[in-house]
View (cartoon, rainbow, N blue to C red):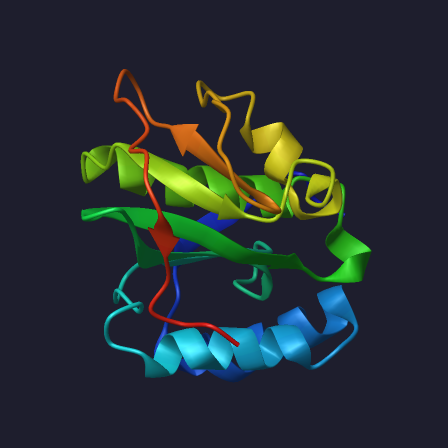
Length: 166
């Protein structure tokens, strides 16, 4: 299997495939519902911030989703979910999708990205690999949450709120 991944923003034709990737990666429907809930909420869903890693023939095998949340009154991006088909886990596909998402967040001059989950949760989905690309992870107070500072920006502090809860 290739370790060279193409990345791109999702297309409308990817939606059902991404639901299947979520189902296969996590092995339960909860995460599919979580993904669908984000798509349905205009306060959370930002078109163009779902990044897909594909095989050379453009078959999606992984994705990373950035949505909107708030820390106090500061709008901030949130990374999650991230999913990789089991056959492609630990092969770089998840890391490629996460790097594309974080590069876009940096280009948008976002101060930080909140991560749903924790570093031990993500190795098979590419998170640990992606943290080696200039991303710093300061302490963040919250269960199963951390924040990644992008560049020299400070991570906003305060209460974390999401437009979508499931």
